[in-house]
Picture (tube, rainbow, N blue to C red):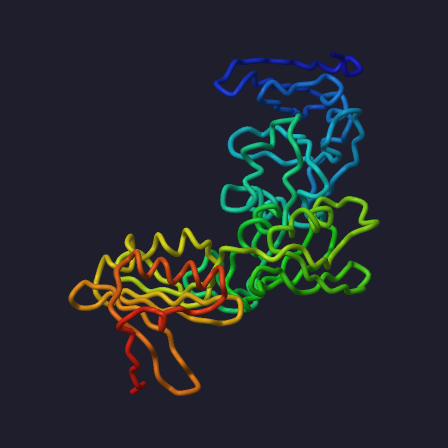
Length: 350
C-alpha cells in the first residue's frame, strides 16, 4: 500500500489468535501506528484510518469512516501510551465511545473493569461492543453493583441480559447510552419496568419481559434507527421461578428477593441450607405465597409457611424431598402446601 510517498511499513507476525499486522507510517516527524489482530487486516480499512489526521486531542473526537463491509464506523486518534511515542489510530463503533470524554476516561472505560473492549480493539472484523454507563439508584446489599452518584461503564448487552433482569425486586438502575438516552429500570417479578428518556427529553414507559430487554432495547444502545421501537409488550409470563432470599454461614446471602429457577431453588436445600445450623431461605411465588426453610441445631430441615392474618405459622420437620415437593407446588400452583403435609403444626408468633 502507498501513502503519497510517505514511508509505510507493514509487519505481520503469527500469534495463537491469528495474524497480527502492524502498520507504521512516518510523516513530518510523526509516527502513526495501526494494529489489526485475529487475521482482520484489510488494506481498505488501513487506508481509511491513515486518512485521519493523526493529531491527538485532549478529549475523544471520533472521525466518521465508511468502508464497505466494515461494521465499525468511527476512527479515534489516541496519544502515546507508555514508552512508545507513536500515535495510534483505532477503528470503533459510535455506540462504544462517549464523545468529549478524556482519553484517560476512555481508556478506563474500555479496560477489563469496564466494557472489556481493549481486548478486542485490534479486531477489525468484530461486531460492536456497545457501552452503557450505569449507576444504582437504590441499595443492593451484596450485589454486583453499589449505589453511587457516579456512572460506571458496562457492556450494554451484559447490563440488559444479566444485571438488570437478575437484580432484586424494586432496585432501580439508571443506564445511559452513548447517544444520550437514559433508561431507568427495576425488576418486578419477571418483568423489567421503568422509563426511557430520549435526548430531546421525551419519555416513554418501559414494561417488558425481563429476558426481552436486550432484544427490544438493544437498538437504543447500538445507536440504530429507533423507528418501530417497542418498549412495552405483554409477553409470556415465566413459569417455574420463585423469588428467594437466603442467609448462610459459609456460602453467601441475599437480603433482597432474587428471581431464581425452581431447579436452582431446590438445589439450594441440600447444597446450602443443610450445610450449617441457622442457614435459612424464604421462597415466594408470584402472588406472595411463602415457604420458609431453616436448618435446625440438630441438622434437620424445618419448613413453614407464615399466616400474617392470624400471626401464626404452620410448620414441621421435613426431608429434602418433601421440601422440594413444596417448592414445586409453590412455583407451579402459586400456593403453599405446607398444611397439606401430615404433622404440620400451628405455632404462634412471639
